[in-house]
Amino acid sequence: MNPRRFRILVIDDEASVRENVVRFLRLEGYLPSEAEDGERGIQAALRSPPDLILCDLMMPGIDGFGVLARLRAEPATAGVPFIFLTANVDVEDARLGFLLGANEYVTKPFSLAVLGTIIEQKLGTAKDQG
Image (cartoon, rainbow, N blue to C red; front, side, top):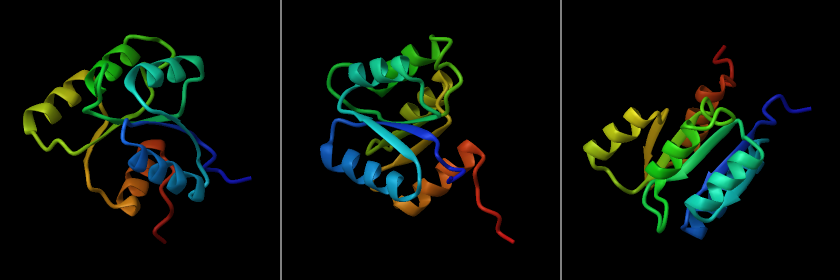
């Protein structure tokens, strides 16, 4: 069995981004699930806490900041690594994300290989470089 069978929740209102990330995660041996908006993402995370969350920042309804704040307030999801995926490059928004408890802030467009490396680092599954 693949030791990287971690469950990763992808929350993004942009279907093409969400689908590409989910496809990549499956190919890498992860178990992805997805949500198309913040409220559905919160419900999915609380119903079955994932090992890591990838979340868009700017979404209609509850934005990524709201998702992060709600999940950090819940014992079941408070410690789940949380990575923002966003087209927003505003330094103040990144700072706010980190203050709310985000573990990483990745700007779109991003390389799937780089995203994979970041995920491995956050989950402690980085491959040996030896």
